[in-house]
Length: 190
Ligand code: SF4
Ligand code: SF4
Image (cartoon, rainbow, N blue to C red; front, side):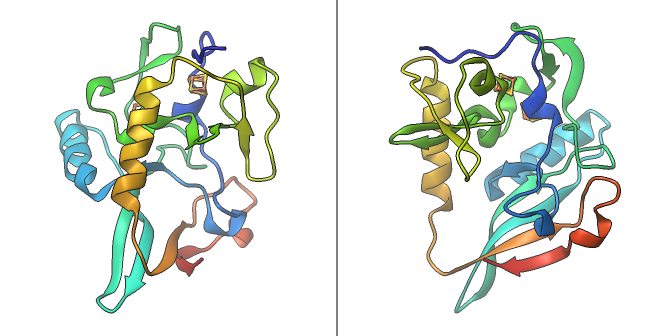
C-alpha cells in the first residue's frame, strides 16, 4: 500500500498532543536549532506571532545543551500551527503557507520509525487503512511507497539529534482547559 494524505485532512497541522506524558504539556512542531532563525524570520515577514520554546536538552560537562526546539500552536490549548493558511492543499486540506520551507519534522510526518516502517497512529491515514496504534502511539503498517521524502527527512532529524548525555524535556505548561493542575512548565529529566 502507498501512503497518501486523507482527503480534506489537516489534522497534523492542527492537533497537538501531550508528549511524552500529560505532565509535559502539549508539544509544538519540533524544530532543529538550525531551523529556529528561519522560522522566526518567516513569521516576522508574514506578521505572525510564533512562540518557540526549547523541547529537548542534553546535559553533560558543559551544562544543558538544547538539541531541539518547538513551534507552539496559536490556540489556547496548543492547537493550530501559526503557518496554517486558509488555502487548500492538493489533497483538499488547509495549506501550509511555508510549504517549500516547512520544518524537517513536517517533512518527515507521519513517519516515526524506519526499520520497520512505523507511522504516528494519530495520522488519519492509519485510521483509514485500519492500522492500530501500539502503547507508544505508533503503528506498524505495510506501507511500501509514497514516503521517500518523509524517510529522508526523518534520517536527517535522527542524524542531527543524536547526542550523548542525560536527556531533558521542556514541559510547556500548555493544556486543554481543566488540565492546568496536571501540567508543568520547565525542564524535566527523562
Ligand atoms: S499526514 Fe496524516 S494527519 Fe497529516 S494531513 Fe496527511 S493524513 Fe492527515
Ligand atoms: S509548518 Fe506548515 S506543514 Fe508544518 S505544521 Fe505548520 S502548517 Fe503544517
